Image 1 (cartoon, rainbow, N blue to C red):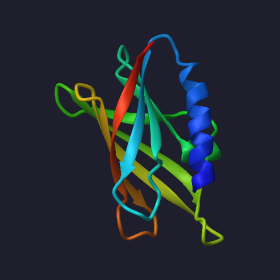
Image 2: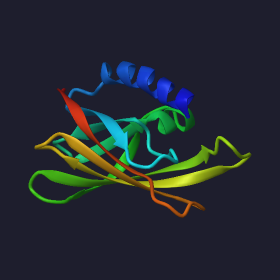
Image 3: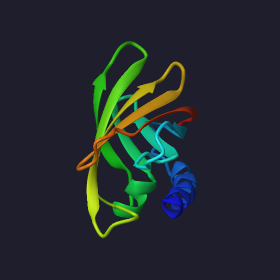
Image 4: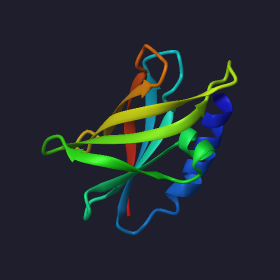
Amino acid sequence: MKRIALSAIAAAVSLAGQMAFAETVYDCEIKVFTNNGWIAPRVIVMWDDEKKSARVYDGFIHELVGEPIPAKVERRNEISYNLGWRVNNIPVSNARMSLDGLYTGVLNMKQNTLSIRGVITGVANQPRGRGKCKVKKG
């Protein structure tokens, strides 16, 4: 898990420098509220205000996909959006298996925060976290 997180940080710094012109990058340091993993300590949301669309990138996505993935976006209220994304085949560190993660997040653009909740196949508890985001306008 720690290697994935470190890889994500290095890749995220590189990726933030390559953002598309119309995107705003929310670079979020996440405080994880559960100790079972599954939520990355750093999550990057690339927001396209013109299209009202988002892409998400973290350590799991970096290791498994290699590039940001699109998120489903729904307006929550005048200052925040619900985001949803799926990451398949996340390796389990203490077993020879992988699980899928369905993640939902709330991106608050006024407070620059991101709250995340995950539903992991085969895992009873739902990992969650919340963090403050540094904003880089494109």
